[in-house]
Length: 188
Image 1 (cartoon, rainbow, N blue to C red):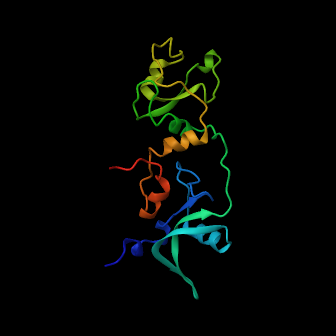
Image 2: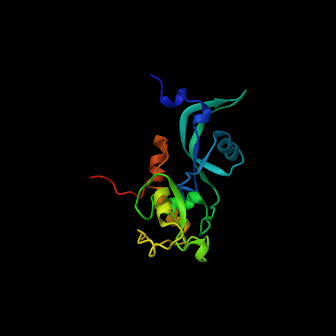
Image 3: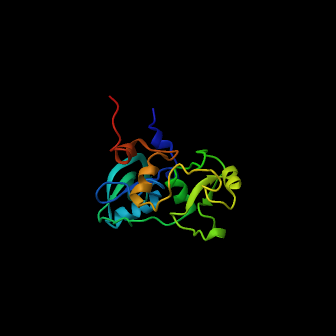
């Protein structure tokens, strides 16, 4: 019987990238490299292979298993604060409307509307569903009688990474589990 990795196309074998301290570079989006980039980094002696797929690639004089988990040899210091993007805003707010908690039809809303002098900053923008955004209109949450679930803050990268663990990607290879969720409480 064949191992499932053996029938995979190499393009379906992404490599999980860990920092030099063996923590993922990023949880969300998950730090993945295509197999070609991982092999190039291996030949340039920039990474150590931690785990591999059963799938092999071949050249005229070399055969090697594709790496499934690699660790950088030099530590990459993550930046303290993430970029202000729609995706990062949704991740900070856990992909839920901050007025009603609904997870669909998401957009963003200025807590203090721009027409009233509100700025587009982490501290003044929240995730909102389209119906709540329309209902609130150009008013503050107090004026609209729509209290926020959580006051908006400028998140750190650590903050977003912690939230990202709650939204795992659709595909996780068996060899990745020990490196992604090692700090989660084990079941008895």
